[in-house]
Structures are given as C-alpha cells and as structure tokens.
Length: 162
Image (cartoon, rainbow, N blue to C red; front, side, top):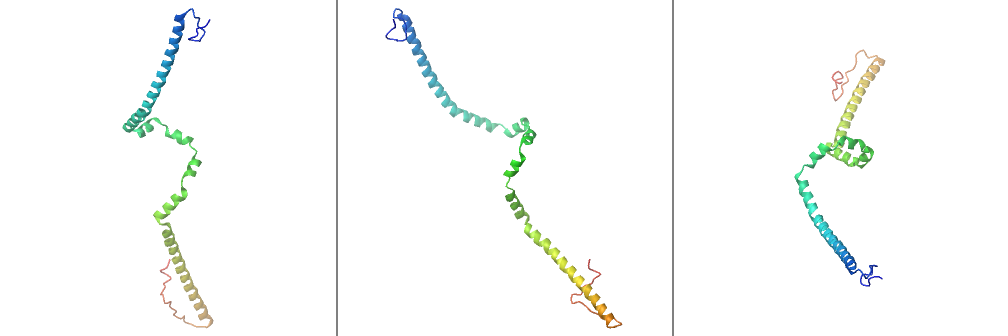
C-alpha cells in the first residue's frame, strides 16, 4: 500500500521513510531555489563588476607593448589577403589628395608651357635659318655679288641659341 500523503510509493508502515522522502524533496527544492537565486544574483553582480574591473586593468597596462612582445606580426601579415586589403584602400581619394597637395595641374601647365615655349623658339630659329637660305638662293639666282643684309626685328643670333 502507498502512503496517500506522499504518493510516491512509500509503504504506509514506514512513516519515517515517508517523512525522510518529503524532507529530501523539500531540501532539494529549497537548494535548487537558493542556487537559482544566488546564481542569478551572482551573475547580475558579475555583469556589473567585471566590465569595470577589466576597464580599470586595461587602463593600467600598455596593450601596444604587450602585442609587440607577444604577437608575431609578420605571421599575421603573411596570412593576410593583400588583394582584399588593397581593395579596401580608397585609392581615388588618396590620389585626389596627393594631386591637390602637390598642385599637379600647375606643374603640368608650367612644364608644358616651358616645352611649348621652347618649341616655338626652335621653330622661329628654324624659320629664320630657312629665310636666310632662301635669301642666299634668291641672291645667287639674281646674280647678286654681295649678299643683302636682312635683319630680323627680334635680332636673333643663331650662334647663341642652343
């Protein structure tokens, strides 16, 4: 026969066993409730305290030096995918910044202006030489014994030019 109070199959003839079973169940339930409450309270306290403690510790140590002392940066770089890293670099923005800082358009204008000026001067000197040659040919065809003096309004001296 089972004990109607406990209902767990404990014989009615052994009331101490039934009482012991009830007490064990109550102790287990109370222990579980205490553990749950304590665990929840401890976890809540740890959730508040641990970030503060870690922050205080991190503020007092030199993480950069620890990384330099204990991390093999060359191994990390060797494993890195450089193509993906380069794809993330804003190359157009960097190029625009460099062009703005060194004033590349001004440099191009000045250098091409200098080249254009040199080209024009060279063309003028060649035109002057051709003109002198045409004058000599014309003088010889017209049987002029003495060459004419033809001067340029700019007074170029071919010997002085490079």
